[in-house]
Length: 481
Image (tube, rainbow, N blue to C red; front, top):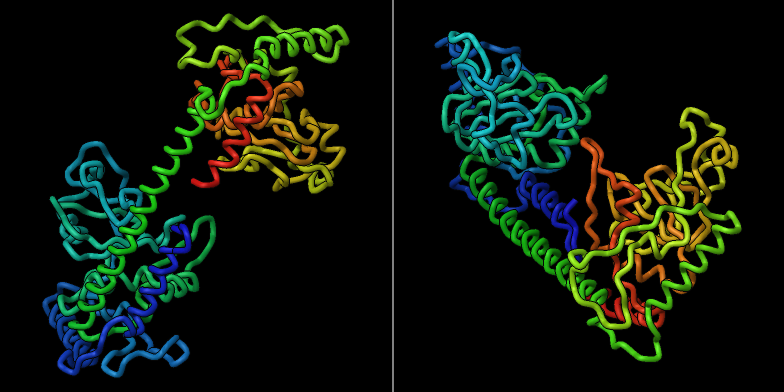
């Protein structure tokens, strides 16, 4: 759904289509004639094609009942079935796609956002004598009859070369006495989708056949009004497209401004430096002393020393009382997590919030709830760990680098890592840095960040007082964006 500010453009498009097919978007004109005469012309055209044996005669479709008419339409309109209006409804050719072949073949996957990239459409092998019956023409409408995209339609606006269509598509072809764009807009309306839903079977995959499509009812205006409706809807949609585009540009500008603000903050250019703040080097010494103490008490394990930060890693200048440090030098400890056995009901839906990647949102600073929860048995019999409240939790796989501070105790899964800081480090300052950090990831299918990459990340460290001033300044300025 496209929703921004106080404008839900997707809902507005749906409302426009509803008004359009009810005859409330355009005026009715006496000179347009009557849709009944239009239907007679279409039927005469079909009879002529049947006599010439260009199409087959089909069984008559049932009369439209009053129950099938969901709303009133203008007097010079009429209700009609899709199959009555169609010259032909034909399934596509079943064969596999090829890099090379006799002719190109459009598939469901080639249709994206009501467009086809003809250059990427694959070829197929089809007997020469069968090509003609599967050829696409301009103004044909293709209909996806199965899978997750069932019901998706495409009005063929151009055919740059001879092209056939694949078996999971249905081609519908119409008289020139109908506006293809009006029919296409009907196939985007709520009335169309509600009928499709009723006629769709759900086995392994949703499926809708030509009979269901042929029995659909739609309001039919005279041809002149069909064209006025199509033009009006197109003009209104163009305005909504402009709103969407402007909003996307605004969002991009907004994000750039946020990033710039964060960049200034971590360079020490957003706040003033004060002599009484002291020096970040003293702060780091306190952290190192605390870590040594915890190692002696065997509360944490001693880790390999991190390498010195090179001049190349210092990507910008920082104030004199700041210093560049590696993230691993700043944290006292870090803990991963795990997932209880999902097949064991005794481990799930308990009282312990269980955090995974889907609970860590890009625009959030804090997490005060989780989608899932586990039981004490689930925690005990898994590698998950319970993290006390107000700890920085970082995503290590998939949405790499996202981070939040948990506002309640949570168990975490294996894709997350909890970082523990001394109280001379403001976690909100580190969290702000994570919003703009770019990590080196690995993995073919699922991207992840290795622990040593995380710990080796260089970070500019100000004295504690300035960390707090930076956070306060960002909290003041970022909401204004």
